[in-house]
Image 1 (cartoon, one colour):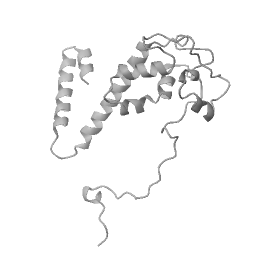
Image 2 (tube, rainbow, N blue to C red):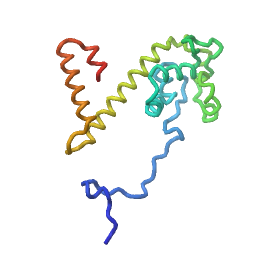
Image 3 (cartoon, rainbow, N blue to C red):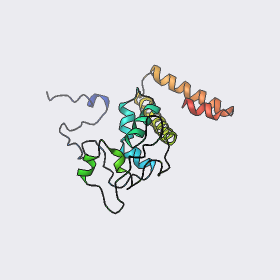
Image 4 (tube, rainbow, N blue to C red):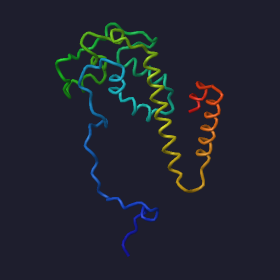
Length: 183
């Protein structure tokens, strides 16, 4: 008798055993080779998605503080005026530059500029990290809610349903900000 594919019993198509992995950099993300001239580029360069998924126990403010310091901010929320960017608009960064600035990421900012020059504050960064975290949590909730399938819903699924109903009721009462915090 041929070996049984465990997924076949669940109505899933059989998957080949030796599927090649897609080629990607070691970090799993494409390196940003232009000067990091805005908050979006800085967060992408810091691999914020990966951080949020790996550091679920950390709060968003803690993650934002780490990124802030990494790109030239200080622990008290200020900016170290000595830490200025070195990337030029006319040149793309090389792999060598990306590796050499791993510990000095502020050098990836535009030539001669720091976070103050780019008009980025720690509050801006924290709000962006919170927004991204909220989006990931929402997507994870959808993935987990859909994974239950046709069986009896689990405790987490029931709690999610109750949270959605509560948020809808709060919306009807005009309590939009409270409803947003729930979801």
